[in-house]
Image (cartoon, rainbow, N blue to C red; front, side):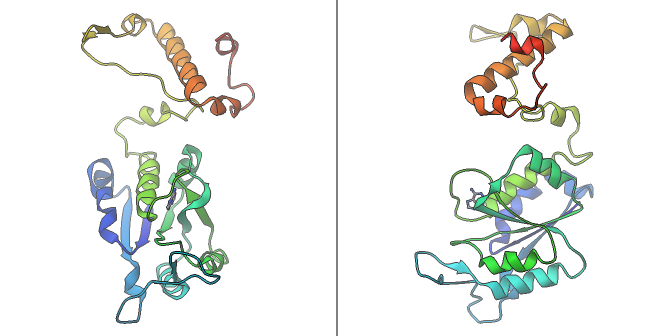
Length: 240
Ligand code: ADE
């Protein structure tokens, strides 16, 4: 899979070349190209922003610079364009799965008050464009949101995780939060690992994990239970 990121702070994305994702890039499972938006400016100040029409605080990123960048980078085809913004639709595990199935994604990082809307409207005439938010809070720019999204989707690519079952058992993969995990020692600071996990009874262990996931979801994220599809809870689940 190919990922391009356009930003005025290319070094901000360097952490994506570490650890698991770094190895995925080295192994050719993922190609990551980060581009400096200022390369498409023509003035001595390399200006990328201007004051907003209609007034108000902050600055808006200029359409000409973004337009030229996207024209050049998309000359050989049409990626799915993802624009991080707190005004976007929510990024979820389902969207991470959709993105992991794309051949080519391009992320356009806005700073200041965002990018002139016509850049996105123009791009949408040629390619799919998603405005996406990673949560109900405001960051100073799209870069960290891109890191979040790329990390979430990259671990779903075939071969990236050592054990593919990890992704299948994640929180959200069955619509529930994942329950607690334990490792050795059996007792630590007078706290014992739950008996059932040491029982070797895999039926009982699965049942217990399911109950823990349901209880945690009920207490922390009850709206997730409401959103489960018809038939997702069986008669054992309903008893809890
Ligand atoms: N840019 C600023 N805040 C953001 C958010 N919450 N999600 C995505 N991009 C952003």
